[in-house]
Image (cartoon, rainbow, N blue to C red; front, side, top):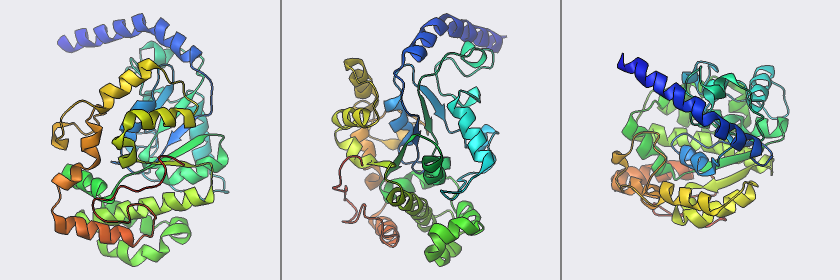
Amino acid sequence: MSDLRLAAGKLRDAWLAYPTQRREIRQCPAGKPIFIGGTHRSGTTWFAQMLAVPGLWYIHEPFNPNKKIWQEAFSYVRPGHENTAVDTYFRSLLQGGFRQTANMPHCDHPLMPLRLMNPSIQRVMIKDPLACLLTGYLAARFDILPVVLFRHPAGFVASVTRLGWPVGEYLAAFLKRAELMQDHLEPYRELMERHQHSDGIEAAAVLHGVLNVVQWNQIQANPSIRYYVFEELCQDPLSAFEKVFCDLNLPYSSATRGIHTALCLAGSKDPGDYHTHAVARNSTAMADSWKRQLPVEEVDTIIKTWLGFNIPLYQEGTSDVPGNQVGR
């Protein structure tokens, strides 16, 4: 009975909030859809929440197999080719379809008005690290603003291993994808084969390198793809995101800055104090939290693995924060 009362209360609140939400969605300034890639555990959820101004239609991980819509993690399609399944699904998302993937207030129940009604959506943002290998394809096929987020390899490895998330199974899956291997990963075949049955530190470092080398190659091939570095954003997040808003043609206000302050400058410095998908964090502490989690010898192993992928980020050592511009 208590669950029914809770559900009824949430539905009531959703219907009461709907007129305001509908107005915000209709009044959101129009613009190109934003697609946020980057590996999982690279700060994409935090990054997207920083961009989620009222009225922006925010779609959360529609290509995540856990949503029971798209079945494959880390799909890859060659830019310049055509994949009807990807195109049909992505086009529907841009048009407001599959609303169960929307990460909007009052949108988590099929009887809520945002799920039943059809407000005039002006602008869409899609965040999905499990579609990060599709960034180049989507950028070539659709008129979007594609974004890739990079994070220090030790930060990725510390997070994935702390959470006990799978690693080797993805390497094994990639080895079976002929086009992905031919286009990007053949030079790393032996390394991937060596770690395809492990979920340890070295395997996680290889997975991070594999995912990022594909994204880096796609950025080099398509200048429309912007990239940002997690650690640079964390250094001075209020100023950095004011620039990001300008880059992506999003409206920025004093209210936006207040939200950013709450999302970046409060909270514990201990990453263990946050649940997996928390977005309100002490950003300056989270940028180098791995330094308090990993022993030096493990960090050295991670860095050695990363350097083998020849990506011109994080090249100067374990405490390095890259000196490139905040976004490109």
